[in-house]
Length: 464
Image (cartoon, rainbow, N blue to C red; front, side):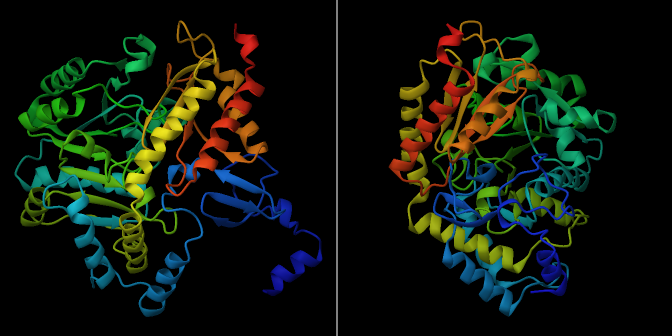
């Protein structure tokens, strides 16, 4: 124990149940956050010994479950051999082994992986790679990147500018504006002017093509989208036929297709990657979260062989981060990949996701405040509405989803949330993304607590 820590405890400043040194700039404004001290499987315990069923997987991160001793062992063994060697001076064995093992699972032809320290870094890397690729091919006029409204691609300025999640953009609008956006692929709110959404695959593909042609196809570098939208819309799948149509538009105009699989990758939707479910290959895939299941901060960009080769042959990729290509991160990611494979957890996510959807539809499908229950695999969303018939959102001032998440936590279940999907300000969705090792009893408990929390916040009788 350090001297400072001992003095702090002796002065009574240390309360394990409600730790607050005053020196941590927290993500939450809640002054009474419990202290997490242990986790195993789908459960986290706080310092008072209270368990919480992690039905959100943190921020839809944890796939293989908490408390895996084999991950800790691999991490320690690798750190004991080699913790850090700069990526410009060395490669390392766990990284080479991991990239080779991951390659056959990626929805990219002849993929080359560029690992970094998280999803936002990975998206910044993908954007710069798309630009570098076109410059290397003698097309420096290609700089425009198109994304969608109702999307989320990260919190660094470039990734945030790309994102179409208006509540997160709003405080920083003065610094944003270089990227362009087409409609969200959001069937539930298709045609609602304030939702910036369409629900027909042909309409969405045509809109993208029109934007490319209006800009001048020779100026467009890439189109970026989530195969299934995560928290920005609440687990929204695109309409049937969307991804093949979008891929065709991009290829016809020489525009790189960039798939943001940060939340959907590594089994979350019941396939290794969500794009697999439509048989579509991207030029660049961005991943993170489930790659290390929360055990290590790691993201990665997987570029097609064509993108890699053209970029390197054209002068190289002027880019890099201090902690990219990290040996310990690669060792952890490799062990997570092995566990997913050996334990059949990708298929488990598919089967358990269907079970969770069924449980939720049974328990809350008829509630008048539930607009839609949707999702794929263990990425499930429940959109909440004030008026089910007219799909009217609750006013943001009521903070309905925050109240629901708080009620569930008080009952020992952790949920995730999304806001602003109805019009950029209003709109509430509960998001569930539990570990793939969640048991059936835990799935039943999660669904029951969602129902109890919803009834506590929005009693069914009050909406009739």
